[in-house]
Structure formats: structure tokens, C-alpha cells
Length: 205
Image 1 (cartoon, rainbow, N blue to C red):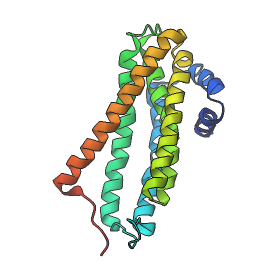
Image 2: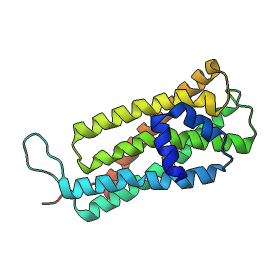
Image 3: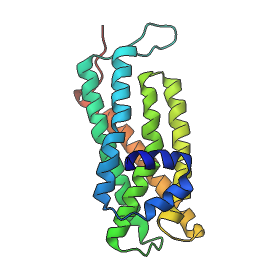
Image 4: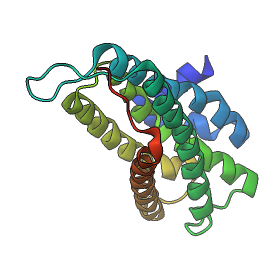
């Protein structure tokens, strides 16, 4: 129930939800394991269904679909990458905390960094539901909208969650957004490398 409350709350009323998250006393591992493995299943399952059952088309051509085995391999790799990406994102946020004057103790900062990474990526995970219809423009639009809201959550959440002045929080948030963008590029490059190693898509004849 707590997962659902935070997931909906961060989308509907982020200001009060960030305050509620700050007042919790969970470990970073509890926050990560109670949210990310479940939320990461949304895009994974949606895209598996979309690319194997619906397919996508280029122009007016016939729908292109992946074989179940190929889609399973790619989706499993994507799922692992999503888990690792959010964890690393949280570690970077925690690492930058001292630079921007977060005065909480190390365990508390670790919780806050992970919590921020978990909740600001929630819109992107939820947007993954559009993967059931793997049209490039539909998914690109959903990703852009979700990404913009995630950026908003970063700027809204850091001064509350980290309990620092807004002026300092703005610089901190800008650094967090930059790290997030760099991680996205790394994931994209990693995907190309993996495809080149023989794990690329196999299409249905």
C-alpha cells in the first residue's frame, strides 16, 4: 500500500509527498527494493508484449515483430539495466550531497539519495506502459513528457528532501539532472555494444 501511495502521491501532489518521504525512517535498501524491482517491470512487460504481439511498422509497411526468445533476452537485459541505472543514479546523488551542504549523517544521506533517484524516475517507469503499442512517435512523446516531469520533480524535491536552501538546491538539482542525462547516454551506448556482441533483435519472418 505504501508503494502505491508514494507512486500516486509523487505524481499528483509532489510537494506534500516529498515532505512525507523525508519524514520516513527507512534504509536506502528498503526504499530501493520496495519500489524499483516492481516499477521496472512495467516497461519490461509492456514492451515484451508490444514487440512480440503488436509490432511496429515503418511507413505503410507491414508490422514488424520480434521472436519471443529474442524479446525475452532484450527485455531481461533492459530490466537489469534499469535496476542498475537507478541504483547508480542514487549513489551519484548521495556522493554529491556533501558538496552542496547536506548536513544529515551518512546513512540518512544514503536514504535520501536513493529515495530521490527512485521517485524522480517513477514517471519514466509509468510511461513505459505505452510500450504495449510500440509506435516510435507515441513512445517518444510519452518519454519526453515523463522526462520533463521527472526534471520538475528533481527541482521540486531536492530542497525538501535534502533540507537545504533553494538557491543551493538549484545548483544541486542541475547537477543531478546532468548526471541523469549522462546515464541515459551510457545506457544507449551500452545497448549498441550489446547488440554488436550478438544480442541484437531477431525478427519474425
